[in-house]
Amino acid sequence: METIYVDSLQFLYHLALAILVGGGLVLGAAVAPAIFATMRSRGEAGALFGAALARWDGLAILCVVVVVITSGLKAGAFELSGAPEGRLVARWVALLVLCASVIYSSGWANPVARSLRAQTPSWDDLPETTPLRQEFAKMHASSSRAMRLAVLSG
Image (tube, rainbow, N blue to C red):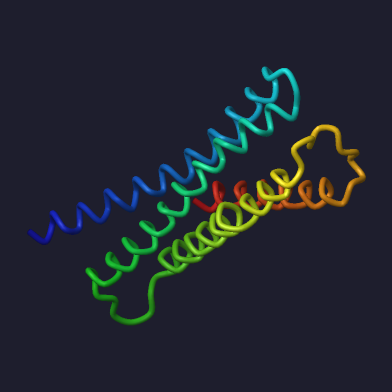
């Protein structure tokens, strides 16, 4: 029975990591470039990709919760005696960076950017120097950096 428990934890842990890393990689390296290359306008592409990101954000946060819970349960399942090994510490640091990056990107930066964009129905007509567009650009850039960091640390 104990091995089913540990195997289930391992499966859920690796599934959540695969979704976070693979999903982030696919969104950034394949989906976004394809959408922005094929849509008629940058505004339509942004709206479409923003809708995809809105769905992704919920899944990404759920996966972070699964990673945190399964990591904690796995740590509890294997009693640690003495100081943890260096590779275990490195893994925990990488997981901390992954979780913080995803929470920042999907839990804060992306929703803020979407709300900024939603405030103006004629988004494409706004000049680049508009404070709203500049704030959106900052949120977009920081979210992109955070997701790259999450993919790398994952």
